[in-house]
Structure formats: structure tokens, C-alpha cells
Image 1: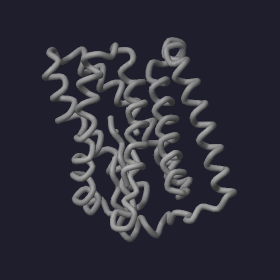
Image 2: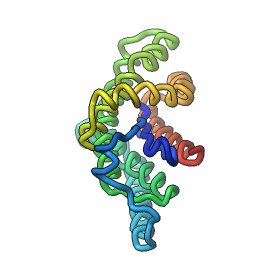
Image 3: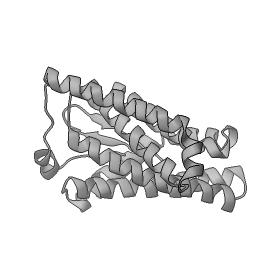
Image 4: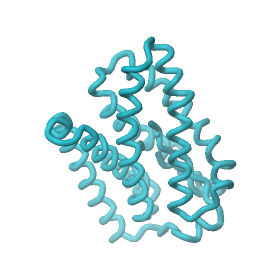
Length: 218
């Protein structure tokens, strides 16, 4: 599921993503965790080290995904893979913007855990409970995508001590508009061409690519 975050809408249109989310800050969120800009070189090096560590962790989890799934609870592997790839996407986004916020990285780790766990359950439900490719894709995009985006919007608002009504009215629909430019195509490809066991790992990769695209476009 997509995770797109839009910050500083009126200034630099900083878009961030997993993991399926858009954030438009109000006065409370902007003052609570201001970004460090321009980014000092020590922080740049720290952010690079985060990216390297997160990339290595993601690769290790990805390579051992099925071993972890078999040897532990079946939700452990998607949860930690969702967390690591969400953190990696956020760190790369911040580095490209020269805009460091450890709080946002932690926020996306939490979101990656939530998104990873429930995305696997959602994919299993779609495959086992809904017959027909067309209906499966429609349910995924018209029920799953709005629901996951709503969960992220609420988490994002609570994390940054924002106003829930403001967030839902101003960012929720905008986030869906951006996500529908990308995720329906992935949904079609995943259910048509990707083996069931690989849909979630592919989803994590799609989330990472989506964040990188957004960071280049904005």
C-alpha cells in the first residue's frame, strides 16, 4: 500500500512516501519538528550512514524473507521488511532534499511496521476471498488504498500533534489523487504477473521507487 507525505506545500513541495502517504503541515506540525536546513556536512554523513545501514538491513531481510517467515510468526518478516524499506525511502528522500529529520525517519519506521503487517493480511484476503482479477483489483484500489491512506493520515497527524480535521480535509484527498497516478498499475501487475508469495516484497520495492520518483519530481 502507498505511503506518501507532502511537506512544505507552499514552499518546496517536499513529497515523501512507504509503504503507500501525503502530509500537509499546519502551524503546529511545522513548529514542532522543524527541518535542519541547509544540512551540515556531519549530518549529511550521518544520513548517508543511515541509508547504507537501512539498505543493508533491507537486503538481508529481503534475501532471507521466506526463512524468517517460516522460522518465526508469518507476520514478522513483512513487518520488519516494511519498517526497513520505509525508513530507507525516507532517508533517501531527506538526503536528496538536504533536509534531515530523525523524527520523520522514526515515524516511517512505525508506519512501515503497521503497513507491512496489515498489507500482508490484506493481500491474503484479496487472494483467498475475492474471485476474479477485475474485482480483486477494484476492491484493492477503491477500498484498500483509501483505508491504508486514512490510517497513515491519522498516524501522521497524531505523531506531529496536528489537527485531525485539518489533516483529513486538506491532505487525505490530495494523497489519494497522487497515489492513483501510480498504484493502480502496480496492483494490476502484481495480481496478474507476480507470484502470491512475492507480492508483498514487490510492494515494498514499489513503495521505495514511488518515494524516489516523488522526490525527483518535486
